[in-house]
Image (tube, rainbow, N blue to C red; front, top):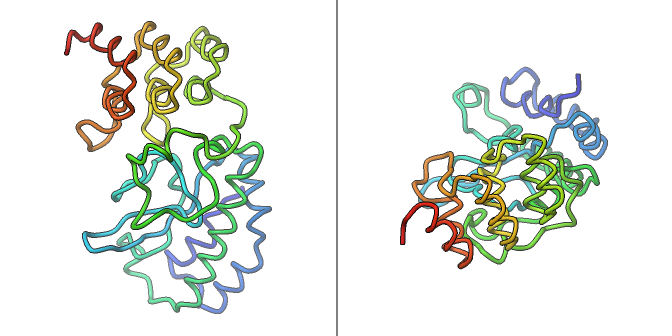
Length: 249
């Protein structure tokens, strides 16, 4: 079965010498691999570790994504595999040359770029080719969050429909029984995406159907709860509706 992790895991487990590993990577066509991945429903990106003064962050190679991607915790559903000494297995492997790392990064960059522009890639509007600014993606960069990165693909679930601002499909997926507070790989619920994209009518609809304005998964106490997003983006009507529901000022 297809698995893009094969050339990356060769580094992780140390089963090939440098020359054979580089040759095996160069024999693969990253664009073909990306197309095959989408056909199999795999939306995962290849990440790399970037060190800075306070530690390190994991970022997708040659791709920028919106959402909470910082710290040591990339979007769980998009963290397909990693490049860099970040696991005990990798640390136990023999040292690799810079040529190996360069070959891996070249492959990863070409794979990621091809993946996010594929017409069937689910998160086309959230990820696009490019390099993150500074030390990594900024989870509170409003200008980056608020607009689609590329034209969106067809919505597959309630989260996609809310992110795209498609009210009719939101209604359809609600009737289908999609979980109203389901979090996607970016840790955002449908309500959260409706808020950051400025689809207030959909946010109000979801609140009226019982969406939780304080639903969150992860380490942060406040981010990215829908309520915190509404405050960050100054969605007055949404904040008013949340206050009425929760009896908070």
